[in-house]
Length: 197
Image: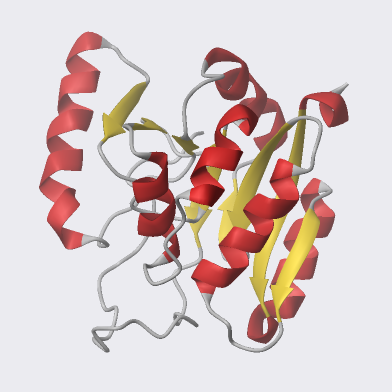
């Protein structure tokens, strides 16, 4: 039974409540909404605290994630195959720019060896990911509330992150709700490098 193997939580912002509700309903997810502009770091931590109280592995999705058809059925084999790895089900273009050439090189190398995933030293997107439950206490204990959510998680994880070559979610590349410390606009196209199916 799927429910016994994996649960889902959607991290939502109040300005995108309608989309967050629809996504949570579509995949049967728990929903955590930031009602007061606390920020993505705060809300992702809430999602991971909820995940730490579940009896199974949890997949976290942001409210602007666009799951591929049969998303749940495609996620489960990855979780079963990588029980000890942090997995990001989204590998995106544009942001962060400093990783894009490395991503391209690793995807080409994966194609050569017919590998179905690459690894990167950091979590670079918070769009859709799953932390192994046995590692959640350590991740929460090492969490830095001053970093962007994806880097806070990646740094707290402290090990390579698995990215399927074919993402299982795309990203609805709309106006960001997060206020970034550098105050620079996010103008790069933020979509999946390769989308499953």
